[in-house]
Length: 291
Image (cartoon, rainbow, N blue to C red; front, side, top):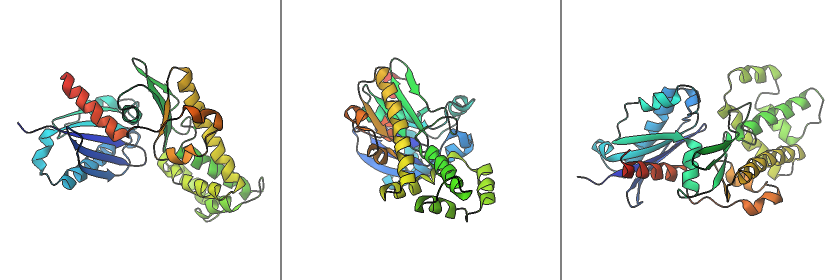
């Protein structure tokens, strides 16, 4: 019998990544595709998963027959919404086996190589996660009611701040002018965009904030400090609930690290691996347990 292969998938609100490895950890191929949150619909999420997986298989140089050897650990954003778990369990996937969890849990497994700790996901959304016999979460209930300090939240606050300058409540700065320029300085265009914008769309404004904050724009600096304080509060909540250490993960994690308040820095550690590593850890554990 051919040796098993393992696929780790990290499907978030901004994009989906996949990595194919041998049992001893040799990377055979990687793939990348579009958003894979269940909030965008089951079909769209699985299309992104399969697109990334197919790229990884193609890069490996192995043929389509290899799918029958692949055991996949798939992490997806939005698995907590009603019906998501059942839809995933009913999916007729092409793999030898597949297991599904939230993208945050996969990131937790990867960050501590399956060991103890807590993570704060800093990406399109945000959430704090740790494991104490069951998943313990802090925040992460979805944008815009939660996900504080995330890319989407930063983008929303950037737009609010820019709109305040439009009607004279605040003085404009280069940062707010750049935000308004995306909408031709037209509030009607902003309202039209808002009616159809997703969290991923709002997160596209976050790089403007980061750019101008790094350049010293006081309004952008204020937003980054606010976001970092919110991320710090999530980390502190995890520590209070027993996490021995906390890692920041996600697309904004390195950027957010630089803005964290000093009081939390001693408790933050670099992650050992990513969410794709977590998916592979999960798949290996499940396979070994005969699940």
